Length: 383
Image (cartoon, rainbow, N blue to C red; front, side, top):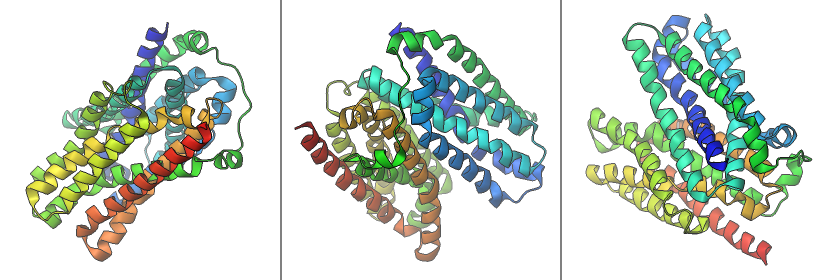
């Protein structure tokens, strides 16, 4: 039963990643069809992020009432409807309206699934599941690119991914009895946000999560520009190595799955942070080849941190409170990944792209401090 349900959850993680990279892939064509300036692409992206943050904050209340299985199934269905809505949109306003359910569905399923896996499955699965998210996020640009290259339009790309989501939704709804039998889920009283924030160690883990996602998202968005402008690397090579940052994360999570059951999450996080620091030092050095290598190394270091923080949440804060904590962790993560890359763009406009490694180093330093402070706090709690 657990194995069958795990297969369903792996599919759900693919569905979670599928919509994440569609807007960026389609926007260069979408904005022309909609008669909208290209710079307005950030608006629906921000609306999606806002919906994701809101549904993450509400995940404890919703999941506690309906269960992780139903929340996941309904959320994927909501996202599928939003994707079809995008494919039918004739105006920029319609895109912005459909972005609301797009984001609401993503945040709810992310928080529900991460907590469920942390509670009921071995640590290796958390790491491998986030590999499957990477597969979904990597596949969807190819789907959109295929639709555009054959002249079917960006609408066909959204319809295709929406159809895949519908198929996954059917499997999820058919699997609902498995969720209840496997976990013995019961309704519980949700924790108010203020009460969760007062749990010892929660502010530290939120700041750590915020910093991790700020670093990863900034590196993903601005690495290529930094390599071209500050290191004189040709754009083709820079773009390839920027993608290698994400390949490093995906491959690193796959490899991490083989050790996650044998090594404590805190030690895995420490190793990841040490590798990130090494990568950033190499990016700092004014040698093009070392900067390229540093970017890949930083990606490998990022790989185990996200799943390890989630996996350790029940142990750090209690299984009865983990859904509430995971929900606000997800919200904190989305705030970091949404707002910190644009902030770097603003700062780089004033000081130049050469501040890229320094910007990353600030967030790496915050992660090192908060993760070690959380380790000390958790040890005191256990005593």
